[in-house]
Image 1 (cartoon, helix red, strand yellow):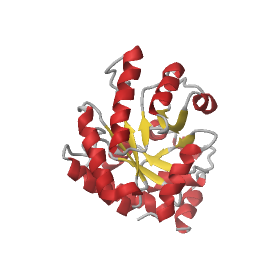
Image 2 (cartoon, helix red, strand yellow):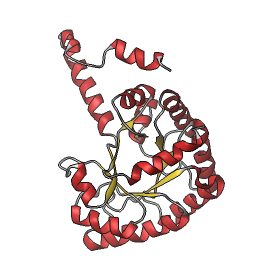
Image 3 (cartoon, rainbow, N blue to C red):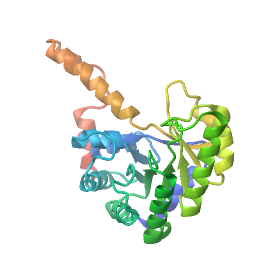
Length: 268
């Protein structure tokens, strides 16, 4: 279980003069490396965790695998850890609440939980169940999938996000996550609508710099599966080189050496 103050630290990180930049890890190695590079907190990527565990992203991961992954990451880092639990792997709020409680025991101080394609009433009840079971001990970031799933457009999308966010706020969430939101004017409108809850967005290609996002109301910026995908893309290219007979491509310049990684864990 994380120290009692870790949850307070994580909340405070959403109230600074710039967005909280959250790199997303997928295993203990990536989490330890990310921490060593100066991240103030770490989130998990559900996609990366699923791939590392041999499952596709999208509510297919066995909950025990999620707990194991969270525990492994929490063991090797000291900064706050937030875990993406997708939709909670169940439509039964009490079951989802129990999973959230297990994540706290594993070392998490925050979670992401999404509405996805389900009615918003279901996520509302899940958040209520989590909050009732664990009180204020967990930072609940409610993911609103209106933009990600193209459920509405223009002003209708802004209104729908605002309606869902109000449901989730009343149920007890601590932040609102709107992946797929890239338009600055829409960000600003949504940030005003969900205040005082911090607005979290997902990094996308071509998105404005963090300081500009902050000026438009964003208080948290997540890398999502981006780091994991880029890492796997690099691994794919190096493997192609190796299989083509160019094994020396593996020995290009890098500051992540065998010794670097071993030292990260030796300190633990």
